[in-house]
Length: 68
Image 1: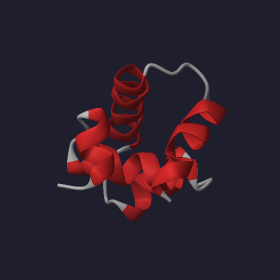
Image 2 (image 1 turned 90 degrees about the vertical axis):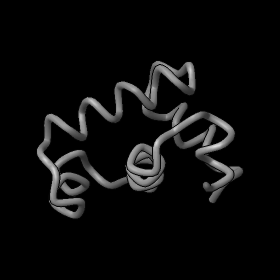
Image 3 (image 1 turned 90 degrees about the horizontal axis):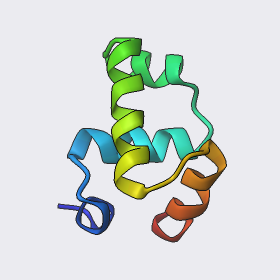
C-alpha cells in the first residue's frame, strides 16, 4: 500500500487516478490510459474529492504535491 493510499484511504485505482489528474491528465486521457470508461474515472474522481475533503481540481494538485 502506498503512502498516498494510507494517508487518504484511497484504493490503488483511486491513487493512480489522483496522481494522473494532479499531473494534468484529462479525464478522457486517464480513461484511455487505464482502459476504463469515462464514467468510471468521473466516479473515482468524485470519491477522491470526497476522501480528501476538497472541492476544486487545484486543491487536488496542492494536496498531492507532497507525495510527488
